Amino acid sequence: MPAAEGPSLPFAYAVLRVVPQVERGERMNVGVVLFCRQHDFLELRAELDAARLAALAPGLDPAPLRSRLNALCEVVSGASAGGAVARLPKSERFGWIVAPSSTSIQPSEVHTGLTSDPAATLERLFGRLVPV
Image 1 (cartoon, rainbow, N blue to C red):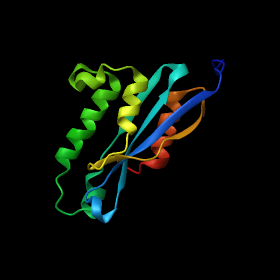
Image 2 (cartoon, rainbow, N blue to C red):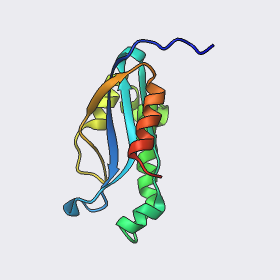
Image 3 (cartoon, rainbow, N blue to C red):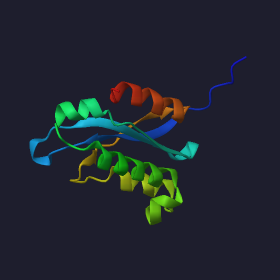
């Protein structure tokens, strides 16, 4: 018998995008970060498709972008390699990740919803928003 579904609680998420040349405004979705305070959940799922990146920005080396995405994942997970920001509470780490920036990896605006299973919601959003 399947487990009973828990209560649907509010969550917030943002899409992470690679922006190879800020002045051109082109971007490629590469990840989703989801935070749900009541479920004590903060996770980032990211994947960089090198072929799609090459079509968008020929000659751009994906290695530094992968390194930056890995660093963001370490911050979100609270890993010691994530430095001082990774030691902040989950809500502050989420705020740091989704703060507007002009770097090569930028967050979308923050969106909200309700979920009883944040991990499944993250997977669903990633599958819908990040073509790989």
